[in-house]
Length: 80
Image (spheres, rainbow, N blue to C red):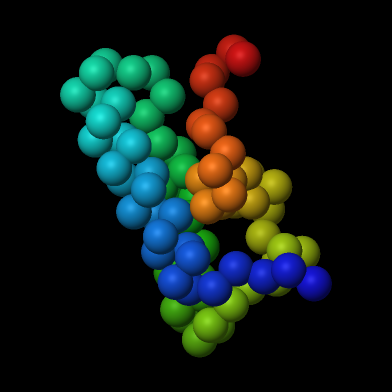
């Protein structure tokens, strides 16, 4: 079973924060805000439960999609 660690989660959050900053600069509609919200909530949940990692079957499909940046998957454009 594959899982994601806190370090990977923190890396994904940093990616989406920087993506959001770049989107604001260039007025891009796909700005990463939703991904940051999802992953920040997951991060808080993991800290509350004192989890060092979380299995794939414990996260939503939206949270999993937000982790795509760790595997070089580019963000999807709205309507694409």
